[in-house]
Length: 147
Image (cartoon, rainbow, N blue to C red; front, side, top):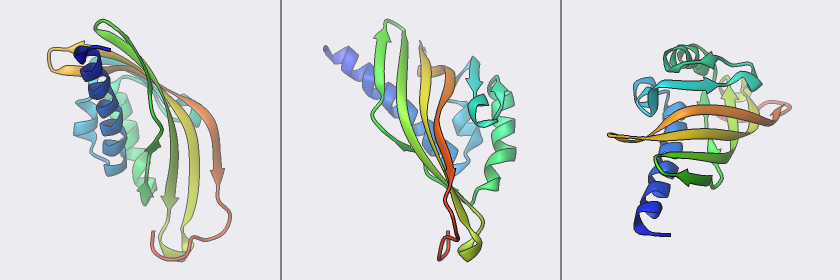
């Protein structure tokens, strides 16, 4: 690998991490800036929206406040570069807390993110995102303490 390929891989890995960080922090403006203007996002496998960036941000702004806390924990992405285009498959384990204190429960989603990226004058951006479901499970019983 040459220095340019290493740099591209690092920038793409950082973009994937920023995507999940903005999700967990519910930072919708910052999240939207990670995509190309014509990006397609498919959250359909978990019953979510399928559409463009604007539709996706609207869906997330309505759906995500259901959860008290979320944490998208990523595995290492498998990145394939092809000039100014790239793809990545990234495993994600995502516990999501619903409720507060002893009444809270944790839903765990396990998935793969499938990204397509495009190099833009502002750097790499997400051109397409699709989730692949591994499993989803609601942990039984109450979660002690505050969430």
